[in-house]
Length: 484
Image 1: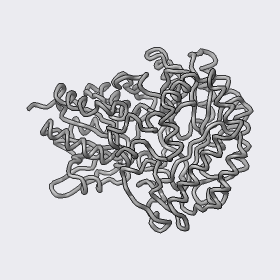
Image 2: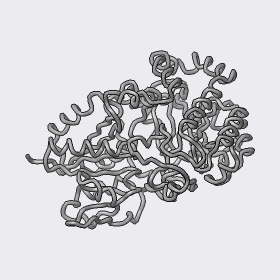
Image 3: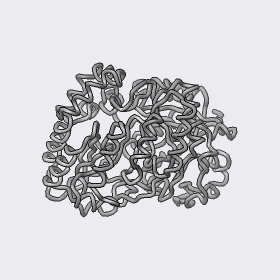
Image 4: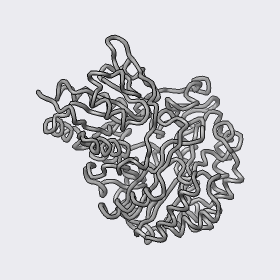
């Protein structure tokens, strides 16, 4: 069978039982397009190569049928998987399936899990032919153009040289983000209507996500830095405005969530972007993630005027001693002040928190609950701490408590790490109590009532899936897990 060596099929694995995916709480609440793969596809197409996309997370019921059809119709010589830790084993399974359908195809794996483990991936998994460490666009281009004959020349590549596993080292240069094409959204089946931001996190549909920077200048203990390291790059305000204008014109997008770690880190860029939105309105609103150190009342007022609807910020924990162990600038008083500034500007606030960090105790969790209850936040997300490969804390995690390293469940929805002095059952009970204490607050309940007219699409989604949301609230378990 002749394969097309100038073509690759890029796949976003599901990572768990596809039979349960239709009622999985995480998919109901939030379905984000795989922007990294869409960016790689656009890059390759611009350089005369061909790339197709398959998002198994978006179409779990038909993903394997679509995969087989795509392979037989286009016959790519390459298949690429972008993997988190929880989706990696599903990627390996799909790689085995692909090779049974199309013998001779080469599999390429990338993503944070691969960048963290590097040569270990090929050492342990023979169905992985190549791995990309770091940014994927140029590395995959080089691999497709000359990797079969000269793999040693491809920066960022992990490959087999006979019996030896070799890593060519990191690429010597990074991409200029303003020189990149917009992601190939049009290659995503069902875009934009199939994809949804978290409920009550947007005013209008259709909506989507956008990434306007890469990397993070901070070094928190729990963050995986393996893909971009300590680098931090960002698109200019002009590029960003043109990107949104394209999404509005091509797909009718009305709200954007900037999926950046630090949207406001470079203040001048944000000011210029907001001024462009005010001078040439697009009829769009936006959300973004910020650190408290990089916002103030004047900037927040400008962002609100330009259409900022919600900001998310990492609180992590309301216990000052625990926070200081894991994060820089652990100032809870400053954080509370900045949250009040956000509310004063008329912007909704979403707090991002963790439970189960090393050093956690019942007392620290209670202090965190009390702190969050004192804040005027509208929404929050409480995740179960997971020590990912590539994070600073991962190397010493076995000395911090009991860690069951089950990759398939490392999705921040399972307590796989239990700090010294705590039990899993205790953490689960406190996790449920934490959510209940927030969502039974009168101010929070009133805010959700106002969503009837502020975000009617959110209420529609909530009511359609009310039974499943209620079951998750009672059980604190993903529906997919319950049906496996």
